[in-house]
Length: 403
Image 1 (cartoon, one colour):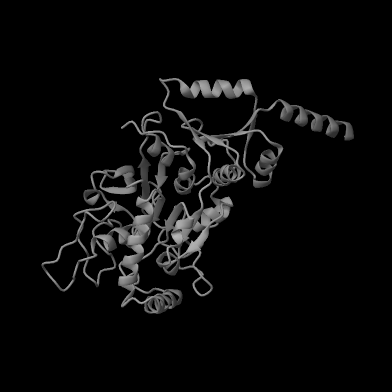
Image 2 (cartoon, rainbow, N blue to C red):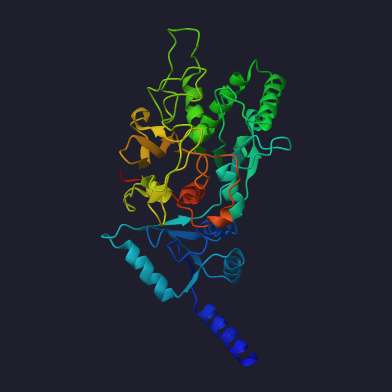
């Protein structure tokens, strides 16, 4: 038995000596798709350039061989293949062929990530999908909220996620739990301490600073009501609910225009949201990702990398975006059957980029959004992969888009 163990050890050493690169497959052979993104981020953070093989085996990663990276793969439970220089050359040659819908993007700099969230010692809501997947993938981030943004601390970061927030200052329309009430009181106290007359006034300033952050060349990712109310707040800057002649200014919003605000007693903010509050995810309810030309439409191709292109529906306070109010310059990345509901959209603002993704948690129990999802039970979640595509997006060395 000892001789066999020594033989196996020497075989592994021999394979490692011959290896030129480590291939992280992202097709059905991957044991943990979500942790694979964390492995890619870890590599970039340690000054290792990662090649993202767009549309090759589900959007695989190619990393220069090192014993430390190989060890990280094993520790994290990420599937990998040792690749010789000849095999690497064959893969890259295949991808470069004009007739195939593939391309390569170099991931060079790990973004500094911030999450806009009220999570603190008093408000411990841990159901935010981005926080959950960043923790699971072991990607570091910093929690920021209104005070940090008012004090211009966003300058420290490259990528910002908006928690399922209400930027209209209406406290989410309805306070559902004790933590919601606590958070409402904290926001009111913060607004007063920072010199604002109301939470709405404070949130508008926060929204405008976030918009400027994005326009300055950074990356904004928002989900659920965070996306909807962010646009409402920007468009409502000069809107007066008591003045019938006042209008929303849709030139200030990012993704939506010509939308109508719901009455204050409604549980919905506006007709941007087409999802029902009692939405139930049935077994045959899916939305579909679009497939883009990797060599021509690089950015949308990065944002839609996946091993599955039909994704199960999931709900939220803002379950789906109304296709009829999406701006013409926003790019739809995924939509429901019939194209009435848009689930995933992308756009540019100044030198920056933004992505909106509807729904609360891609793997939540139908009808429930307050239970923490155990991602170890969903390591292949295509819905969560969309979030992580956005996390790696700022690392890419950009090529000029051709369309």
